[in-house]
Image (cartoon, rainbow, N blue to C red; front, side, top):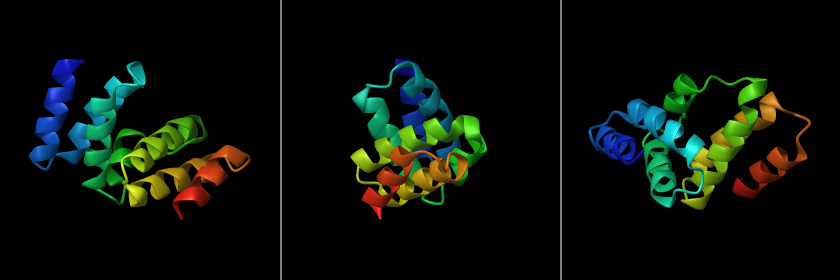
Amino acid sequence: AEALIEYAGAAVDCGQAEEGVKALLRVVSKRPEDSRCRRLLAKALAADPSNNSLRAVLPPSASSAAAYAFVGTIAKDHSALAVARGAYEVAVAQAPGSASYALNLMHVL
């Protein structure tokens, strides 16, 4: 996991946000409390506030709504509010019945 985090950090620093996001999502899915990974993921996502790199790695669907909400929380925790908003908007669109996702979206508006 440490090697993947190092790789992702280098990818982000070299302007390869999509590669960084892909690697960091793999790590954070296995180590959700890893603060370094979460910080780097927020940085990688902030490099692409349109969330194109996230959408390329994790296509929006009903089954990915929870992942988008989790990414939104990570982004919010690291002050990447535009990214958080975009992630929560996808989560709400894919799971419109989730009051939690809607509430989180309202908190970043």
